[in-house]
Image (tube, rainbow, N blue to C red; front, side, top):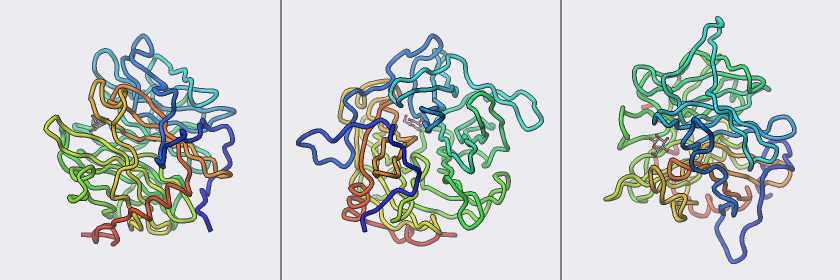
Length: 339
Ligand code: BMA
């Protein structure tokens, strides 16, 4: 049976067929970048952002670097997932007591819809980079919850449902700089407040250099008949700095700390001008995916060169087939590694 996405139909997701002559399982949108330099009065660059279906169209939480150089989260809406109207003002949070809360900085958001509520997880200042967590029901009012981790950690990615009765959060413990190491871990919580039963999911692969320095979870994992499809970023070290490419893995549906398959080769790497030139050259950083459960089509949103928002497309059956055909799972990935 060919792999299927176990999510709702989404007939209006942005989509373009694979260009003629291409054999890539992920292909770029010809309308890229979908958001360019200086998109609004206060913002210089909008990228590494999270998009979900909302109402008749789409909503998103965007990473917006201001002209101060500091990043904040902004809300945006789109009728088609391509043309975005992003608020010029950052999100204003309140905590659960109703008190105002403004993060000093905020970046790389992911949005997971769990039981009808949209949860945002992002990188926040907590006396050092850590993860912030909060929710919205309407993309107007945002409630901040307890931070799920202590510093240093980035790349918080929630699963879109509980598994065995607990919420699951992928993270990437790090240091305070442009971390030269990094594995993906998963933690469990009964209530989104208390986190434990930590497991290591995946380590960098020193033999396949595009993912030899560090790896980090990308969009909210996509449930398929063949496992959780996890797009992730893999980082290579070069004479000119770090290069961020996109790979994919399949995680066990009941025990997602176990990797079933992962790609030896990247699926997308910086090649075109908006990926190789910008504020930080050579970065493709995926943070969101829209999926049509009826047809298996996937629209992947990624930040390009820490400057642009871009889109790539693929079909679940081809992506899963490619992950399996090109698979190499390290011993530590295959275990539910407790350490
Ligand atoms: C990471 C994060 C990302 C960024 C990437 C490349 O550490 O800061 O937001 O896209 O570096 O600069």
